[in-house]
Image (cartoon, rainbow, N blue to C red; front, side):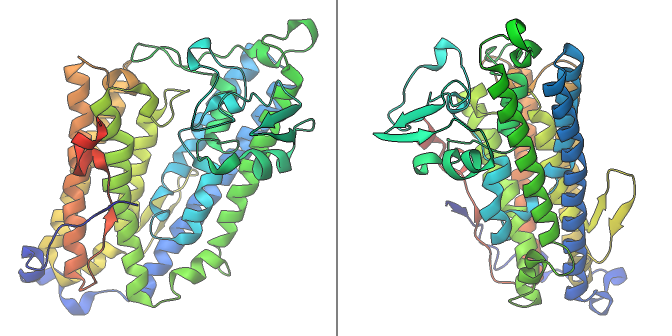
Length: 427
């Protein structure tokens, strides 16, 4: 894992006097801050479960009665399910329990040829992945690297235990949101032009109406992957409950270490993961294969809600899908009590990033998808994406300032060659 660290020992934030309205004595207890953070995690994962179950219901309806209408309903349910989940991604980088689990539900990118049929342009083999075009839906038995895999029954064990990361290859993504996304939309073959994936509903049709073969097995795969998604999200929601392992682990090394975890998640998602691997890399290469929700053309929303999750973690406030609010003592309160100017600077940076992300989202909502924005020669679209990247990078510096203000050990946030050594991207 690459890391990024800006030297801040003599940060102005660390030296400036605290504002009168945020005297040190007004600081909340750090345990209360950790409670808020854990409560928001629990709420976010519970909301993710609720919407994943709605997706499950829609997928069951599609497989039972395939039609254009049930396909559209399943796609809409998938899109809705992403909103609360993406706001939980800030928990990944500071919490080992979440990071170790995350690959089950949000691993990306994936070699979709492992799962189902693909366009001829995809190719038939890869030197890095023996299962690159295995097409488990079409093959009840697979021979990979000289070993036989029994895929006659598509069930949770096959997907989660046998196929997922088969052979130690991270691109063998057999479960999670993006496997389901691929099965609902199919490949997006439009490059940086308009249009998302357009899998026909008849890929789930009965009898002679079935297109592209193996419709029953395709339905079994889609159902199994969706059931697994619900199960995995339920496990994580429970882990953040009052007696859950994730909540207990947050405080296991003391309150300062717990607060450092919050800031680690914020900084690593801001910088290396979102600004770097998910955005700057694709923009440098002008490559639609580097967009996150690439089959559905939903990347603008994923990026927006990732950024919102960072705000939630700092401000200690999350709006649930039913409109209720979870809030409480926050890292912002801690920083403001030590140094009001540092808190104001970070809040301003977060607000600026959300404004840039909002402009990106608005552009996509009004007809220009994210993969079009990063296309070569699209100067206006490129600039919108770059502004969001710049906002994320700037807010990372202010997150580092908050670390110093709180007297925590400097944190090495996750980095990215696309930001730290862009020339390496083209080697």
